Image (tube, rainbow, N blue to C red):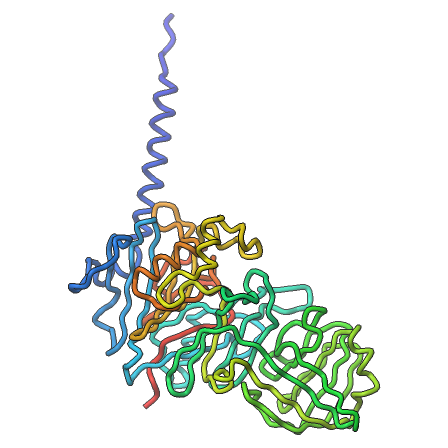
Length: 439
């Protein structure tokens, strides 16, 4: 009796082919789900010459663009989808703005939730991108907090020390990464430093330098000033802390106020009063100050940001690395790209392709940018060098890198327009946004 001949190799190949076809179809469907295909899917060069690195530029929801605002998706030849919201700098009905998640340093919030909260205050956001870097959680109970600069409506809410670590602004020209807007509309892109001092009225002229505002108090930042914008408590451990009251709030980039010490805490995790601040000193340094700063001690608190223009900045946000300078790729970024990250090992993550977010500007426009990644068949992301090169080709004169990865999201005209890597919108630390001016 003859056995049936079963072509197992043929069937195996057929099954593999079907699986491959299924993956390709899923990738195509994910691309088709993007808002541009539901709105105005077409090449829209509008007579303008695009760089050779752009396969196509699509307009998103053009019918809803207010005057001075545009929203595009660029198909980069290297295999990435780049979403860009643009604001004309000369328009009178729009402005750049910053929003802190949950209205305080501690905790995170989605852009969608933040925009809903702002709309209840009669504000109209048009676009927003995730901004600063931070920690998502730690053993101290911090459920997320930014460790970059944040200035909102003139209030100095957060400023760290300079560290050559991923997410921080390193002490080099490449680290000139905080973006700020002055009252007269000037755009700044510089490394900002805190010059803070606590002068004690003890007759000896004792002065305590302040290293950071609303950051983690440790050996790297041994003296930290905590304001009500941090949260309800400092969440420190084994720090010598004292509460200052009867001083002017909020803290600004140029600030001087008298104070009196109303409470001393030798164990840390002090309550932050709504009308005062807390100074935390790391335990080893605190030995020099336990007898000098006590309850009822009086003095003067001084803050002065440098460069001096930052003392009057109304909206400011930090990133970690500069990508474009005067229309050209930042020189340190060129070396970084050539060595595949070896020239700056602390930032080596930037030498791999990932989802990214950024902010850029030139003399005419401001750009909020999100780049999709980690999605085979649709978009694989960019390296930092890819970003710098592409942005300069688009005519962006200055650009900085924001937090990316699964946090990379661009919200615009009512919803998230890109495709976040995890398939959902992640909670973030703060938002760089374009919004309509209040009338």
